[in-house]
Image 1 (cartoon, rainbow, N blue to C red):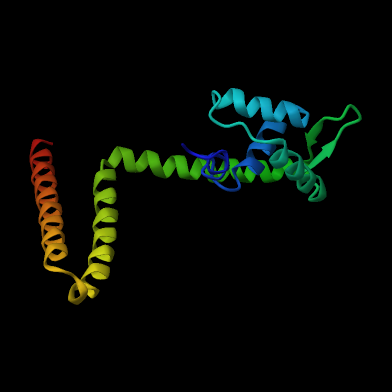
Image 2: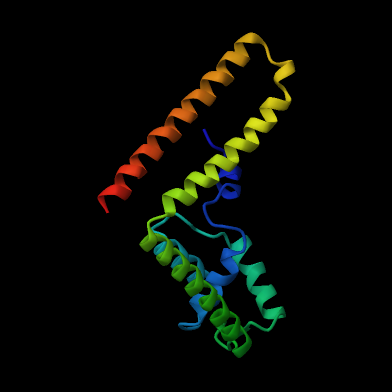
Length: 168
């Protein structure tokens, strides 16, 4: 059973996301801290429910930085400085979307993923190879089988890509 602590720490939300989520949400209209939490839970369909211990201190930092301000009715609203920051983030978001769009159109995403896997395997191989002298015969046999299987997968993928290229 996964502990409650691990569920919080092992969140699928990347570090720093909450800050920009709040700015984006407040760019639509003012919200209370509770409304921010509820909106996050609703938009994520229950997969992310930020705790008050995350949201309120974060709102305090955003206040200190002048990115948000508190209204008379206890809600938080984005400032001009906060809007500029949010717009910069949206520009970066658009650049990333454009890059992914190009990669998907070129249909080389598989190649990039394969290159990344090859690089990781090379690093693992180098690490394992540096320890070959310390391996038992059984470990050596498993290592050899692993490498042979990975080479067969690469050969199969290469063969498949060759056929796809000929068809196009």
